[in-house]
Amino acid sequence: MAKVRLKASVGELSPEEAGLDGLPELVAADSPAGMLIWKALAEGAERADLIDLLVRNLEDLQPDRAADDVDAMLIQLRDLDLLEDA
Image (cartoon, rainbow, N blue to C red; front, side, top):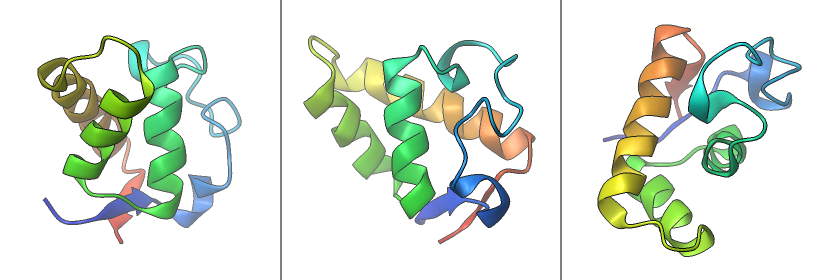
């Protein structure tokens, strides 16, 4: 997967400021995984980098679960048209 990032219109915002606080699970501000992914995507990241970020920063998170979390959030953000190629 190529490097992607949040579109400039939302990259500097928190999920709540971007109007995403009503979305389920990962995009919510109280999701540690979601916030790590959001911050990394503000700068731009590849899928593998996002998975590694979660595994390194979230205790007891296995790579398979991290991959599922990353994929779910990328799908949600793509569906909302909030990602672009970096």
